[in-house]
Image (spheres, one colour):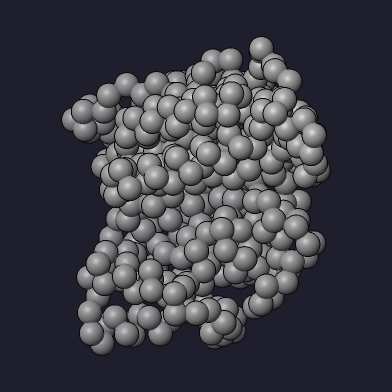
Length: 485
């Protein structure tokens, strides 16, 4: 039996263990930097399996690295698999429910599939260790438990601390509606907080003494809305009030905090927009005689895929398809599909037509299916990933595996509802196989490593400097000075 077959055999033999692990993390549904149980579950499992585990990685409580090197064989090449396990706020959903039904009103939920994402990485690392320790080959397998991908760019802080610096190859994947390689081009993204500081007063008799931080924030948002006409078509700006100035209408708010997100295809475009948004914030402060403080608390570089890594990933992904779904599993997926509106399926139709090149009867036949069962050509994400930071200096590859019904994108309640289903489990197991086989390609044939590094040089990638200041801690904590009011 070849080594790839051994990897598959191990994963299939232990699949129930990993299904249970992903289900438990789905139940925990822990938010960014608070994934205490989820992180410990994975770290403990790998430690018991013989990995050396470094917890509290980069001084982040829920980050860890699990490493295995075959004794006496040498560490290189070092292959890193990045995992995640954070949930989303306000996305609680009852499992298998085909209508919106939160388990807990306002509670958290795994609507992005990170319980599957991380567990597949754990499974791949587990299988690779078992094969590597008997193969008489040099090489190191690492699994990184990466917290806070959602909204706080956990890998950006790990990358800033240098924990990926000695990797030869970095691998990741993401649950989706489709099977495909993620090609270069995920959106660069920064998250900012602007805090306006004013003076409290009673607006009934002493409004002239007050300076409203809320007025300043609202004026800033008006300015940001006018800016949208003057941005490149690929750029986006979103915002939310994190502190809207209190709850009493008869008190002029002395402090308001607004959270902004700026996205575009390239980080330089994002940073140019930040400069303009900073001026809008300063203008709002001038108009209201308040003060404003702002800082970047999270940042996601645009993603750069490596063609050598992607070629191996695509080969293994293609060879793993189609997955053997039962009639009951198709009926399960169809129940979700039938409850979706046409808007949900429009993006699927567009991707099938423009990305996969399907037309006519072939297109209609694929659209009848509730689950994607074939490999699409490479697809660029319209979202953001903190794996982009890693991809700027380590040859990297990332792919999608279908874990959700067609029409149910990540961050939808439907994606959360199917998180424990056989469909989700099968997609996760396929991902584990692809990760393990791809990693093994670079261990068994180490000449692929310099080929990947040469391909990266040919891409002309410039050095990436994170826009997160060194005094900004994971989660965005920072010391403010010169408080007013």
